[in-house]
Amino acid sequence: LHAPGHAVSSTVTLSASFGAKVVAPKTRVLLSNALGAFSASGPNEVAPGKRMASSMSPTVLSRGGKALAVLGSPGGDTIPAIVAQIVRNLVDGGMNVEQAGRAPRLYHPLLPERVRTEKLAPLPKAVIAELTGLGHTVDVSAIPLGDAKLIVVDEAGAGAWAFADDREGGLAAAAKGD
Image (cartoon, rainbow, N blue to C red; front, side, top):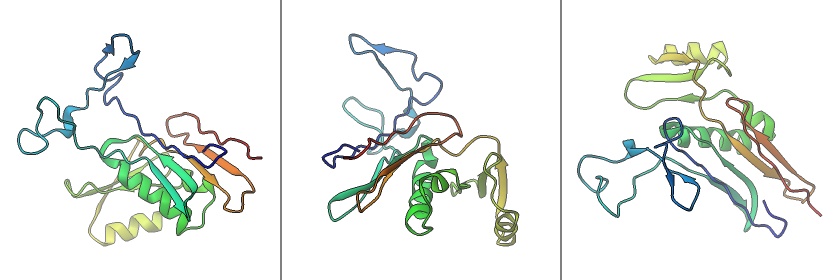
């Protein structure tokens, strides 16, 4: 967030480790190898001039034209679920920036019929029991669900707080206000 009220959220992915391992000449930009979001035919097929569909969803929350939070996370197809869970934690759960970022996450991809959760930030046993009781198979994975970065600004202008997920490391920073 910038002092005059500008806000930027960014989600960047290279896909597999170091992407295509190719740097564009004169740009120092490392190219992605994320072709998985293209399809063999139809409107999202691989073709010159096309852009792939993407699950990346950098997010800015605002009220009355004033930015109150920015967030984003890598994670491929899990990104929309990660972002939605953090937004719900902030807005519906009344959590502060750190609580919202550290909270357990889950992901259901439709197929296969499994709910994935994290070993690092486990769901409460009662929630797992309830999901199982509803017929879901719950997979507790060592692979983290995202690596979120978020900044929340006090609506009254009293300050800003940043959170960098420690699931995989990184940095989030909020500029000190006037």
